[in-house]
Amino acid sequence: MRIFTVSAFFISLLAVTVTLTSGCTEKNDRDLVPSYLRIDKIDLSTTSDQGTSSHNITDAWVYVDETLIGAFELPATIPVLKEGKQNITIRPGIKLNGISNTRSIYPFYADIKRSITLVRDSIINISDAVTTYKSNTTFPWMEDFNYSGITLDTTSKSTVAIVKTNNAGLIFHEDGETNTYSAFVSLTADSSIFEAVSTQKYNFPGNGSAIFLEMNYRINHNLVVGVFYTTSGIRVQRPLLILNETDEWKKVYVNLTVPKYDTPNATDFQIFIGTDKEDGTGDAEIYLDNLKLVHF
Image (cartoon, rainbow, N blue to C red):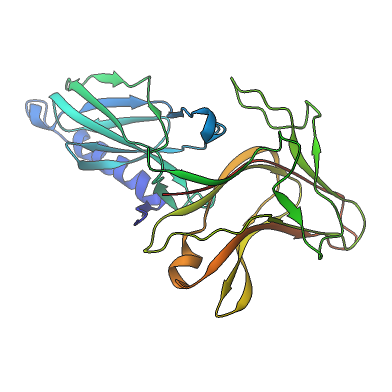
């Protein structure tokens, strides 16, 4: 599946271009007076077998009768040079790998469709924009750390363990959901190393199909996310993303599509997460929750 991306600059440029075009209209040229859609946020609703409804939907890709109007960072007031009843489609957008200047429609979130009567020079509020996972989305691996075992295990390289914490002030919280535990890793000694992999191996779909790892994290030290896989009988470790420290919980969508795309014969994929604490640096603390491997 092709992932449609756009830069943050292009998002802004689309909005500015449409606004300037409408701003230069003559008062008697009604066709150039826009109607407006207002979208403050897009929420996610999940079922019990899809895990947390935590998300980081940052953008709305807006279509009128399947013609792209633009990609807009939320909250947004969106000018549309149409009036009357229109078929509106909103596709939820994310930051690929958490990078602000690389935006994409998230392929696993369902379209939000509305039939809306637009009125020129008036704002229509879409206050109930809620998406779900598409029906053909699969979750071959989910780890929320609330069960007795952990499906993420340290490697022989790791000098520290991954444990669970139920400290209410430290674990991840999502409104309306009950969470008992999050994963915790502490690196206190100089030259400490943390590396953990998913305990199961997975065969990713080919043909350019989208593959993502969703994850909540809170870290005070850089963290590497990547994959192990086997190709031509060789076990390969491939880092894909470095997450920067953050003092609050964040959600990231890690794009795992590339390794299968450029190494089509690769098999036995495992997700890995790790970091090295350099000598003389402060203690490193890593909190993780709601890991989801997602593909069609």
